[in-house]
Image 1 (tube, rainbow, N blue to C red):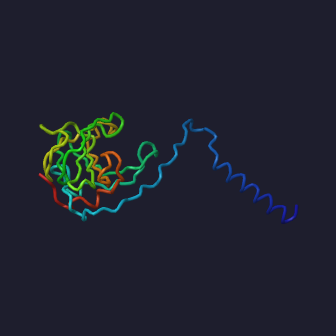
Image 2: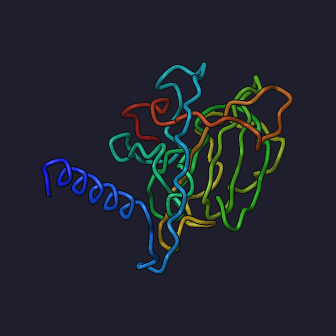
Image 3: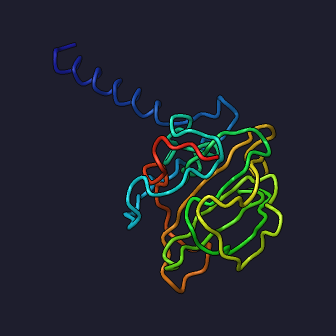
Amino acid sequence: MNRIGCIFIGLFAALIAAAMALVDFGGSGAARPRRAAPVTVERTAVPDGMLTLPVQGVAWREIAHSWGDLRGGGMRRHTGTDIMAPRGTPVIAAAPGSVEKLFFSRGGGGITLYVRSPDRRLSYYYAHLDGYAAGMREGIAVRAGQVLGYVGDTGNAGRGNTHLHFGIERLMPGEPWHRGRSIDPYPLLAHGRPQG
């Protein structure tokens, strides 16, 4: 065989190997999930570090930046900040506003609470709560630092994985509480100031 024939056979074998690497022959028995699209970060008018850390007694250094991490087997991106704490730790308002919605989602955030900013442009999302603070109801005004509820593991948090999922969404004034565009809350939280 001449030199060109050897090169041709080598290229053909490499092409076959590359094609086979892209094909799943079902050896694992599980379908590969499609990966979630990247998260687009919205700019926000809230200056960095102007929000209160929403879990009492937790310091800035104790939270991790998990925005955009893959969740649900790679099917979705994380659009919030998880703040780990023991069950029953008070969850406090990160900013003033009014309680827009008390909601339960079995497969999502579990026991949740949404606070709408006074200008109605932001919604603060508190999820996986163990319960609400006494007297908490839709429509009431809350101040930054006010107890809203308590850390839990409801919804898709996973049993024993007690934490607060804190999210922020940008809204147009007429948009409902669940139609916003996610903003990364991590850089907006009060750096280094534990609450409580």
